[in-house]
Each structure stands twice: as structure tokens, then as C-alpha cells.
Length: 506
Image 1 (tube, helix red, strand yellow):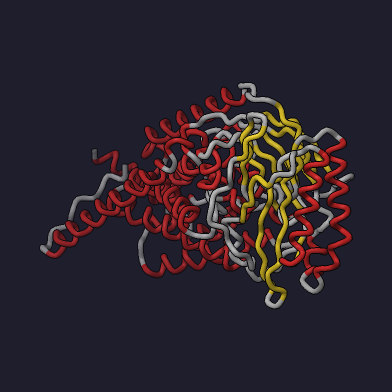
Image 2 (cartoon, one colour; image 1 turned 135 degrees about the horizontal axis):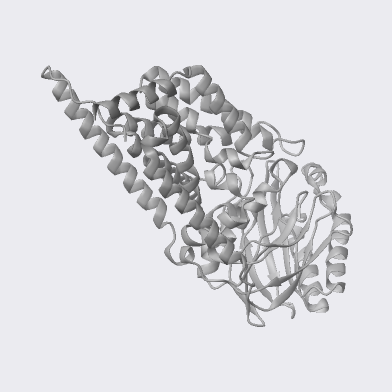
């Protein structure tokens, strides 16, 4: 036992020989290279290891302040990668700061548990805290699921299938576990967590095999020919409309011309992107009547997404879509439920209606809505077979934002049609496999046609919801309780002049 303790001490001294400044510097670089665009997905599995080594060594106030300041700077720099000419830099700190706070809390809690209870508890506490805090963010705040660790792996379609069992939380837990184990091995050597490392590798292999099996399954359901229409209203015209909304009226003709072309190419369903055009409230009836007549004349299901401007000074609008049946009947009017926090919109309050046509249930949401897993779950539980998600992105978040929506669609087993302004429009099947795509630089005739299998695949997550994050939160509470109790006991021992035994870090 004594020799094993000496071996662990030697490993710990070796791991802790890295200077605090170096650990914070490495961690900052990893955050910048892991999140948002131009990222390296493999780094997501170890991104927080340097920070964990740093904060688990000592829990002083100075270390906590240094960690928090480093995270703020790192996430401001990282979120700045979203910036482009279409979007001003000003909102960046408002999106970066909550991420810095969330990960600071997860790291601090894991550090406390590690120092008081042991390294293995610390490993699982960090994974649980990252999962629970991500759930809190996308369930109780307007921050959506931006920045959760699951989204560092959006290109790994096999791993994305895990969301069908656990939602985003399961993927986050598995990825976060990688950082905890890497930090433990850095500090104490692989022997300290060899059993946990084996469990992690088995779980990862199982997730990938499960994903491969799902992806080998043919997509069920009748094929529906969908036309995604790219709006001629780019961000440049959108900003011009702030000064004079009438500048968009000639572009409405082009929007309907593209819709006409989609119908000529055989589209049974025509879908516009988010805010394909803007109209003053008094001009809304004229636009929607034109859409109704188009759906009836061409015999198509038309989803026309637009903004009804309620005020020019200050600029304020209602972001909505209307769904017209082939006979011209208005089947649904949906208002975006989760506006981006900086957008001057009136939020909606109700679910999108499931509109059944020829045995297929059409449902949907608008852009940012699909960063909230609960919206996709609503679509599935309400009986939808295909999700129509009109969206508006920009180069700074393309194609990542679309893949975030894709993960939530896979989680509930829905095929997804996502026409996008100024970024990549996609259509995917129930497993997230790409059916068709049109990049921002390849608008061409402004129409994307895809044959979409329109039938939802039942998933465990759609039935059970956010069970894993709640369990993770309960584990965090337990771990903190054990740590506080252990700390109180040690304090009592020290106050009596007795020194408690050194904890086995395993």
C-alpha cells in the first residue's frame, strides 16, 4: 500500500510540474480550436483537461479567479469566430459570457469533489456537471444549446445517433468524460483510472457500433418531393429594409418565381427560408393572399416564412410562417417561439400544428427554435412525420448551426427540411443522412429539390425526454454533499490536532 501511494505521489508530482500559466494557456488554445467554426473535432474529447489539472491541484480564490478570467477571454475569442460582415461584433460577449460561467461552474465543482473525495469522483462529477449545466442552458435560458460539448462532434454521424437514446445530454456526457479521464491520467497516470478508462472505451465503442447499425437501416416512409427556395433577400437587402421596407417588393416577384420553378421541377411541398421577405403589417394580407393563390393554382403545400413588421422606429417584427394546403386552405400560422435574444421579435407561445396531407404529418419550427431540443420533441410527440425548418444563418455559423438542428431531429427520429438564407440549405432523413444540400455560394436558380422519406422513426429519447441530465444533476448534488461532509470532517479532525489520512486518489 505504501509503495502504491509513493507511485501515485510520483505521478501526481510529474503531472503537476506543468506550470499554472502553461495549463491555462493550453486550455485557452484548446477552447479556441474546439468550439464554433473551423474547429478540430478530436480536441473536443480533451479540451478541458488542462483546466481540470489546474483547478484540481488547489482550490484557492486566486486560482478560481484566474480560471474564470481565462475562460471569459477564451470564449470571447472563440465566439468571435461567428462574426462576419453580416453580424456585428457587439453581441459576442453576451453569448460568450454565459458559456464561460457554465464551464467555470462545472470545472470548479469537479475540482472541489476531486480534492475532497478523490480523482475518480472528480472525473464523473465534471461529466455530470457539463451535462446538467447544458440542460439548464437549453431548457431554462434563451441560450439554446450553443456551446454544449456534444456539438463538437456534429460531423460524427455515428456518434450523433446516440442522441436517439439520450438526447444531446448523452453525447455531452461521453465527450466530457474524455476531458476528466485525460486530466486524471495527466496528473496521476493511467493506472489511477484504468478501470474507468476501460468503461469509457467500451461505452464509446458501443455508441459507435449502435450508430453504425442505425445508419445501415433504410429510411422508412413514402418519398415526398420537397422544393427548398432560397430567398433573393440576402442580409444586404434585409438591412436596407430597415430604412425602407418597400425596397423588397420587387424581390417578392423573384421569390414567387423561384417557388414556381420548384413546382415545375415536381415539388409537392415548397418551403421558404426564415424571413424570406418582410412586409408591413398592413401589407401582410396582400402577400399571404398571393401565397394562398399560388398553393391552390399549383396544387402544392406551401410554407411561406416572412416577417410582419409592426414598427419601423424602433424596428420590431413578428417572425412567422403560414402553411397553405394545395386547395388554398390555411392549415397553420406559427410564430417563432425562441427569438435570438438580440432580435426585435415578438415570441410565439404555441406548438406548430401537425398538418396531415396524404397520410404525412407536416410540422415545423423556425431556425433558432431547433437549437432547443424540447421543440423537436414537441414536433415528434405531436405526431409529426417531417420537420420543415425555415432558417436564416450567416457564414460565421455555417454549417454548424444546421448540424445542431440535425442532431435534435435525429434525437426524435424526424427527417428535416431546412432552407436557409445566405448559408447551406439541407434536407436530411430520419438518421441525419444528407439527402441534398445547396451552399451559400451555389444559389444557381435558387431552388433545391429533395426526395424526403416522410415518416418518423420512434426513438427512446422522444418518449423519455431529459432523463440523463436530471440524473447527472442529482449525481452532482450527491458528489458535492459528500465533498462538503468530508471537508467538515477534516476540519473537525484538524481542530482537534489530528491530521486525517491522505486520500487514495483513485
